[in-house]
Amino acid sequence: MTDRSGNDIQLTDNIDYFTLFVDPKFVPDKQRIIDLLTPILYDHFCVTYGVETVSQQECIQHLESFTRQDLLPTQPGQFVSSGEYLFYVASGDYTAQIQEVVDNFTSERAIALIKQRLDQLIQVGIKELNYLGFTEDEDALTALSALPYIVIEGEHFVYIRPAAIQNKDQEAARLAQLLTPYEFDVTLDKLKALVRPQENRYVKITDTLNAKLADRILRAKREALDTYQSLSAVEQAKLKMPLLHGVGLENYQERYYPHGNFAPHILGYVDKD
Image (cartoon, rainbow, N blue to C red; front, side, top):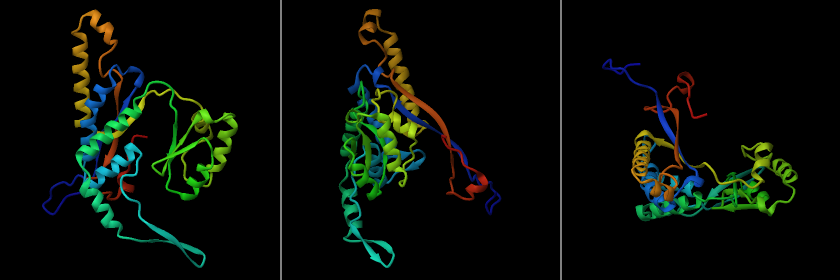
């Protein structure tokens, strides 16, 4: 396709992205790793997410997803019945509430939230909670909250506490049946795994990391390895491993539409799956 001047228009491109993960079992100095990763994650969530420039509100939304906390106000209102239908009627000046949070949100708070979440994620040992999923379905949340082993954080993020479950397979089957009416992408086999204790390994930190930010991590890994290899055998034995030994990246591609999702059914989709 060309523009009016006859120049070619690129409708789509395959973009390299990266998933960042950490294996807590191979983290020799957690605080130094948190300090190193935090500015990279800040640039990812709040400056350029993938290839897209990030607004202040989008930054907060990314941090909501990462920290699993509700940082923006939820829209107030109530369901009103009209015949056989229910309608949600908003109340209050919701836009003004959102804008107030956006205007007062600082980079310092963003950085503190990132550090707090990294500290939670990079934990050695058995996980206390296994993540089940996210839902805004109030009926699903009500049904799940009645189960003694379910923990709901930030109002919408649902976890399973395996230590509170006696008969694992029986409870997995019960949970699968309970979730059937709701939009949870989870199989019975996955539930059987989630109701059991899991070692905290290969923790996904984020995805959609662009190549520029991934390169910052790779350069830091190379520098950490060079530093480690320059040490004496005695010093290496004390440290056990290079600083970023447990930090990894996994490459995948997604199709990007510079002009929006124009004719994607013709051009096709590419994603990390």
